Each structure stands twice: as structure tokens, then as C-alpha cells.
Amino acid sequence: MEILCLGLSHRTAPVELRERFAVSEGALPGAVQRLASTAGLGEAVIVSTCNRVELYVAAEESARGIRAAEAFVAAEFGVETAPDGAFFRLPTREALRHLFRVVSGLDSMVLGETEILGQVKKAYSSAQTAQATGRHLNKLFQRAFNVAKEVRTKTNITRGSVSVGSVAVELAEKIFGRLSECRVMILGAGEMSELTAGALKARGVRTIFVANRSYERAAALAESMGGRAVHFDRWQEEFDGVDILIGSTAAPHPVLTAAQLRPIMRSRMDRPLFCIDLAVPRDIEPGVNALEGVYLYDIDSLQAIAEHSMSIRRQDLQVCEQMIEKHVDEFQRWLGESRAWASGGLGAGKGPVAEGMGS
Amino acid sequence: MAGGICPVGVAVKRIMERLALAGSTLCFLAGSAFAVYSMGARTFRPSRASFWVVLAGFLLQTFFLSVRGEALGRCPLTNRFEVLVFLAWAMVLFYLLIGTAYRLSLLGLFTAPMALGIQGLALLVPGLDRLPQRVPAPNPWMEMHAALSVLAYGAFALAGVAGGMYLAQERQLKTHHLRSFFFGLPPIQDLAVANRRLVAVGFGLLTLGLLAGFAMGGWTAHWVKVAWSALVWLLYGGILVAVGGHRWGGRRVAWLSLWAIVAVLGTLWSLRFISNPAA
Image 1 (cartoon, rainbow over the protein chains, first blue to last red):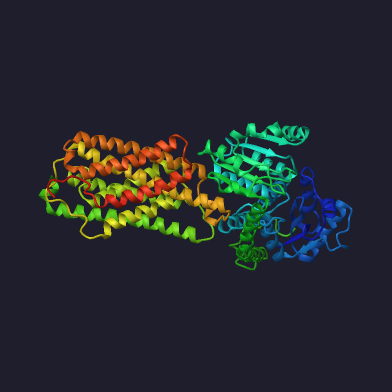
Image 2 (cartoon, each protein chain N blue to C red):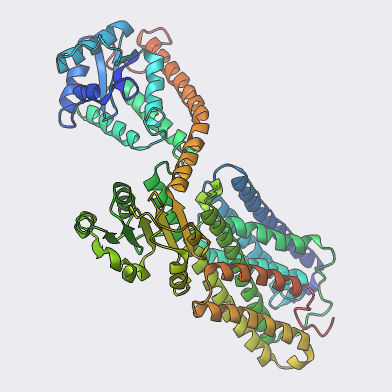
């Protein structure tokens, strides 16, 4: 039995093309059933996310299997797969490697992201429920999930935060521990500050104050975040209970200086203050970092941390590839043995009971 | 005591307690090796292994102390050797009690090297473990005084550990140089709280220990010890007062608790811990 993969991803096709082949969650069981029952194919799994549409099939013979999958795509989407180079067609060994790399996050836009594993798991269980999978793909996907787990736990590929928002969250957790008790104040409603505050909120922050030159904008953002709007010239009155300050105003001069902050910090010595300055020019005077209990990060330092985590991930890429290669070898050996059993070549008596042999 | 009548039994017990102590020291050595490895490696992966190693070390310590205590018929604090082991035991005890919140954190990794250091000193310095010719008649006040004081030093030692971790974490957060072992350190606010609480617990125990010492009576004869204990008491009391008034941030408390335990352990060495009229 051969395992084949026909698909397109963010590496080979722009989003305008990918969206034409996307299979919605509701349509997935039907589509995967039709693919599995296409002549020449026995088993199928369809992985469809915003970054990739991939058809995994088990077929008796490589070239015929690929042709069958292409025929399915043509019939299903009314589009030819052949003309542009967007589609990749992977024979067994490459298909195995590709799947293992995909579930491990090595083929993702953000190296090492873990969301894809959940998406593939969902795709597989949908195919399984639709009875489109059999012995080979069941075994393959189980193996793939184990590979992903191994890669994740034994290497640094998912380590660290690689976006400004997630770095801010990680730092906040390293300062305060649980974030549920923390109060956040946003100075200046902007896209970056909204994203960062959103990431903090997703991790349990309950109280959010928004102060903006335009009060309407502050009120709108506060409402969308479940927070409270504050008049910009009165933000200092609310400042006492704040643990995390996000600055992103368009002000040409610092909004918060060390001289302002010093007496405030003296009265709250045992509670740290995390300042996130996303503004350019900066909102918070760099000198505040020297005050005890104040931790100031500007956009550059957050980005530097994100890039550092990314480089740590990249360093481990080689190790991941080696791990995956080992599993590819193993799985291919298993495929070879099961093929030998199926054809009665290797001690026919010992082989697995013929199940779904020859489609 | 039965052990006194049967010399073979005494010898067997001596070997047993030695083995237990050596075993526990090995546990802390393993814990320390794990700590060094984790910091040397690019990343720190929290592991339960370090916790179990420290727990095993603690159980072996407890075994040692109970065998020794049984043999002496009193709390095993009759010489410097026992005091050191008891101190290491007290420190690990507080780690296990307070560290449960950070069970997977680096607190255990820092505790293991410290316990290894104290216990290694006890084992390696020759002639420390001389059994007194005559076991002094147990005075419950004196025993309580000694035990509570050493427990207090255990809490102070762990406060020093938490203080050191606080300073490491603070440095990383301030300088933005997040080394990989940053991943494993507990949140700085939790470290500050643990630091303060351990100082408070140690101070309470030390106060009780001193009260027991006064109840023991005859303290004028040991004025050096009394003065020294009073200094330690004032030192930690001062830290607590400053913390209570919110006058000091975590940084100063961390530095002080670190230096205080270094000073205390340094001078403890030159004091006779237990008043032993026979010596």
C-alpha cells in the first residue's frame, strides 16, 4: 500500500487560490467519504485549514492513486489541479515526512505553532467518523500524533513566545504569576495595544482601563474589552491600582516620567509595575526601568525577545528533522512488511488477518 | 539504653545511620547535578524528578536523625555534625512545606545544592562527629531551645534561597536578557512573598527558641551566645519591621535575607551550639 499526499499550502499557493479549495467543517465528512470511495483509493483524510488543503490517501499504486485524487479535486471543486504549480504531489516517503512535519509545526507559517496539531486531529477524527480511514491511515495518523508529541517535548521547537503580544503575556506571568488579580491600563487606543491587552485578557486579566485623547475611541475599545474608559487628562487618578501599563499614544513626549512615578512606587513598594511601551516616539521615559519594582519593555525589546525565541526554535529544526526521519523510516518499514504480508510473501500464517486487502 | 549494652547493635546502628546520611547526601548531589545541568542546557524543563530526589534525601535525613536521636535518647543536637545535618533537614522541610506551591520550580534545584553543601561539610570535615562521652541529661527547655533555633535557621536559609532566586529573576527582567533558565524561575512576586513569609516564620521560631532558652535558665553563663542570638533576632526583626511598613521593596529584602543567612551560618560555626557541661 502506498500513502500519497496531494495538496497545496501557504508555501505553494496564495490565499486567493487556497480559499478556492477549502473544505468547510460541515462539508468535510461528505467530501472525505467521496474521496475514499474514488476508484483506485481505499482510505482518505482531508486536512483543510486556512494555511493548507491536503488530501492524504492510501492507494495500491502510486501514479494511479495520485490521478484518482486529482480526479476527485477536479470533480469536487470543478477546477483542474494540473495547470499551476500550486499543488504538490507526494509519493509515500515524502508524504509521510510531510505529514509528520505538518503536525509538528515545522511547515507552519510561525515555526513551531501548535494549533495545527489540533486541526489535523480534528480532520482525522472527522474522516474516521465518516469511515473513510482504514488500517494504514489509522496507523499513520496515530503515529503522526505521537511524533508531534515527541518533537514538542524533546526539542525547543514550541518554546518561548514569538509575537509581541505573547511575549508581553509571558513577561506579565513571570512578574505577577496569576494574572486574574492584575489591573491593566491602556494609554492610547491603537491596534497594537488592543492586541496586547486582548492577549492579557485571554490569560485571565479582569480589570482593564482605557484612556485615550478621544474619549469616544476609549469608550469603544473599553466596551469591546469589557473594561472601563477613563478621561485622558485624569488617567493618573486611576493609576494607583494598576499593575500593567500599556502605552501607545501618539504623544511626541513621554506621558510617564521617572520623576512622576517615583513617589507612586514608594507607596506601593511590594507590588511590581509592568510597563509595556508600544508607542514610537516612546510614551514612557526609559529611566523608569531603574526604579525598584518597575519593569519597562519597549517595542524593540519585546520584538527582540520574540526573535530570540524564534532563533531558539530554528536552532532545533535540524534535530526535529532527524527525529522525523527516523519515524519515516520506521513507518515505511511497517508499510513494506504489511505489503509483504498482504501478498503472502512473508510467512503468510503469521501475518495480520487480511482486512480490507486490495481495494 | 539497650544499644549501650550490646556493642554489636551500636556498631550496626552507626553503619546504618552513616549509610542513610551518605544516601541522602547522594540524593542532594543528584539534585544539584540536575540543577547544574538544567542551567547549563539552553532550556530548563521543569521536572518532577528533582522534587522526588529532594524528598528521598529528606526521608533519609529523617531516618538518620531518628536513629541518632534514639541512640542519644534526646534530640540529636549534641555536636556540630548533628547541628549541620539538622539544619539541612530543617531547610529541606521548609522547602517541602512551602515549596509545594512551586513544586516544579527551581526552588528545589536551589535547595538541593544548599543541602548538599551543608551536609557535605558535615561529612567531609574530619572529627566533627564525636559522640560525647556522657550524654548530658536531657533538659526539655534546652532541647526545645536548640531544636526551635535550628528550625528557624532552616527557614532563614530557605529565605536566603528565595532571595537569591528573586535577585536572579529581577536581573533578568530588568536587563531584558532572558536566559533560557528564565523559563523555570517562579514569578518574581511569588518569590518576594515566599521570601517575606520565610523570614516571618523563621523569626517566630527563633523567638520561641529564645524564650525556651531563657526558660532554661543559667543563660548569664553563655553571654556570648545570648548576645549573638539577640543580634540575629534584631537583624531579622528589623527586616520584618521594614517589610511590614512597606518601606522596602523585594530587592532589599532579598539582598538582606541572603547576606543575613551567610553571616548567621558563618558565625554559627564559631559558637558552641549546645551547652555541654561535659565538653
